[in-house]
Image (cartoon, rainbow, N blue to C red):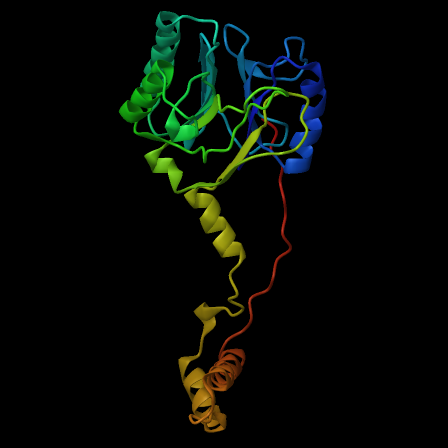
Length: 281
């Protein structure tokens, strides 16, 4: 599942470009901060209108729970939960802490694997800042209590012309989902916002099993195997295998002998045409 993390900075241009970027990148979920206020897209928004989640049509993320609070919104399926959030730099430290604690309380109530992504407007060396401020320490403390790690690799995400690049946009992931999270990176594509977007992929166990099954090279129906015929065929043809040959040649001739035995001793599996079903959510 490809996920896009986007701080749109209330930009109309960013809103207009979003759908095209989703199509080009094959994105299935968008975690949004500072969405365009007049957007007509079917987003799930928080109470303050500063955080949203968009699940484009034909996504395979089947929602079993969703909700929002002050500065955050979440969706959950049977495998993991995504929380999108935004913490404004205009709040004092007490208000910042209150909103962060509200997000943490909700995260604690949601069992299982968890992704928290958004613009925290805080600094910490863990995500590439030169120093760690009080807001950054509070975010790190929350992540520690939730058993989460920072996915950021140090690349800046806010690059307003004339200003030093910073990283207010961060991605946190539960330790239990980190091994399934791949290819986290900051995109360099133009998006109409002052923030560079982030993309990453979550590949869960059942998806891996399906892919491995689809990649299977087995061609024979082993339920109809005739062991005697298999052994006899291999025995009859093993004289063609020269044990003094180079390793590659030895492996090749051995596999040819085994393949011949399989062809003779059991029928091949009839290959069915693949069918793709798109589910609307």
